[in-house]
Length: 134
Image (cartoon, rainbow, N blue to C red):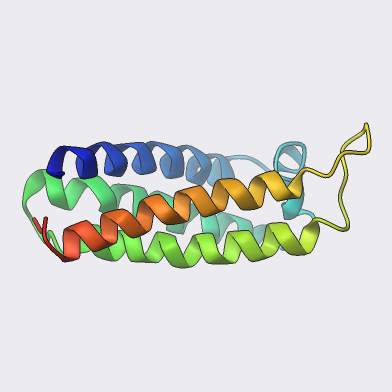
């Protein structure tokens, strides 16, 4: 199970490092093409969310890999659970407002992706706080 947790941690870290860097480095106008939910959100909040995601990505792997402040790993996972709850709510709220060019509603896909990431982060939090603590 320890190996499974490491795989999940690395996968989550890669995903959140990627989206966090994108939110930090790209202007809101460019993000809007891929992440339609950013439209009503102020640019400072998008950048802040990117910073939180990037810090959480580091927190999932670095403390566990170095053996320093290992309690930060499950705390980062809990933080991502909270962020993903917010992500699900944002995607579901935006669902009625946004459609693709061909008329399909895509925000439900974003909510499902957030739900999958939430479950993976919850597994890491449970495992690293509980029976497979570092």
